[in-house]
Amino acid sequence: MIPKNYNIDMENISFSYDKRKIIDNLTLHIPEKTTTAIVGPSGSGKTTACKLIARFWDVQDGTVKLGNIDVKDYSMDSLMKNFSFVFQNVILFQDTIANNIKFGQPEASIEKVVEAAKKACCHDFIMRLPKAMIQL
Ligand SMILES: Nc1ncnc2c1ncn2[C@@H]1O[C@H](COP(=O)(O)OP(=O)(O)OP(=O)(O)O)[C@@H](O)[C@H]1O
Ligand SMILES: [Mg+2]
Image (cartoon, rainbow, N blue to C red; front, side):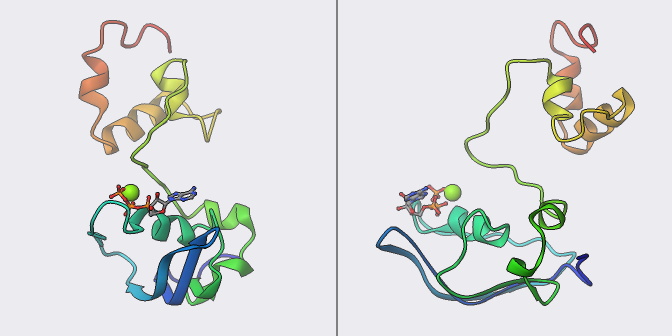
């Protein structure tokens, strides 16, 4: 299933890791094509809330919707096609930077890799590394 739009809606959601309630009856509307910052104290559940949108876990109460459709109604594949995450605890593989960038799309050309690096504002930094362009 393809989303009809990219609005994200959380409707009265609650979530606990084991028995400790982290999110209690949260309702949030994030319109498509906008930037939203979720701000709050450390441990208040910001990362957890973002992970619930992409079904890293499922909510125990309420509904998370993408394009007005419950995220549970999408296949995992079509849901994941619509999310990019940059987490706080980033894992890099012990491999070239190019291979790290094209991990999700191994057949990507070097042009696409460079384009992605530019979009992420890390191209200049990468090109300053001593072995840049050697191990492509
Ligand atoms: N996988 C997990 N299993 C159990 N508890 C978890 C797990 N991940 C997070 N927690 C707990 O859930 C609470 C919310 O964590 P979360 O990472 O969502 O907070 P946060 O608002 O993103 O914090 P920070 O500002 O430090 O990034 C914290 O008490 C955390 O210890
Ligand atoms: Mg966090």
